[in-house]
Image (cartoon, rainbow, N blue to C red; front, side, top):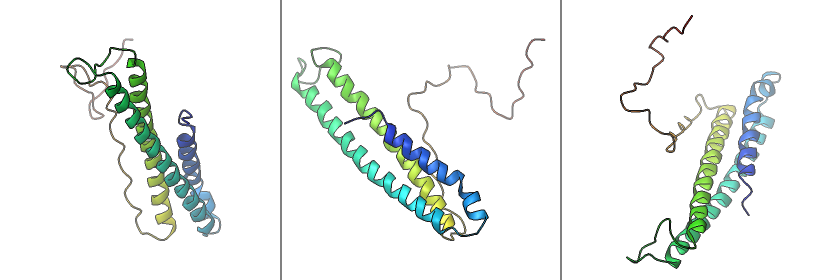
Length: 159
């Protein structure tokens, strides 16, 4: 059952809180074992959640494909935007995109947990965290409208 992404956000928030508390947890005693154990447990939970989300994503993909094949268009392919199953096909596609986003969220949280655990376990430099991908749904800037870079001065406003 899909629950709107609450477990993925909860996992991200739990790992984020553990990482935010690392300086205080390690700083007083220098003992990283409790923090390391908590990060290990949170990372294992993230891996288990990712497995469930991936299975749901796979099922949504099968559902979407079955719906496309249920009422083929005149050329034998799916007739996008038409027919009684259009809303259901769109819902399956929406669910796939949502689950992709949740898997990405959990992957980033798990990578953060692994990097922090490596640091706590004596790594001189933690593994590099993956750079978040660009948002494919974000529209590019209009043509002929240059992006302002931090090196460019801001124009003075009126007044």
